[in-house]
Length: 116
Image (tube, rainbow, N blue to C red; front, side):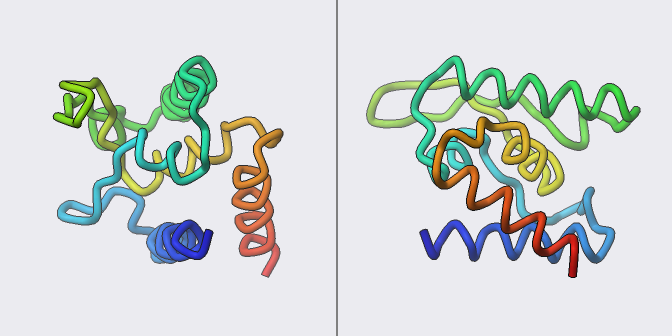
């Protein structure tokens, strides 16, 4: 859980610096984010990613700077994934269902950071 908070704090600091689209900044993988949040249901994963993509479309943010379809080699074989900007990672987290404990904690973390 501590690793998740470190990740969330880094993500918040990048967005606070108004560096949502870093040219050479950290790129995150959607499946890694969702794994940290302990979400294993594929339909829940897909829904959170679709909502995050829809956020970008609705707000006119370039998808090419936030989401890139990639394929990763794992012990299970070659699996599809999304490489995301820090902003897209944040959007995925806030679009996950808060019925998961770590998602609810992450969403609360962002709310508290925003209020400060």
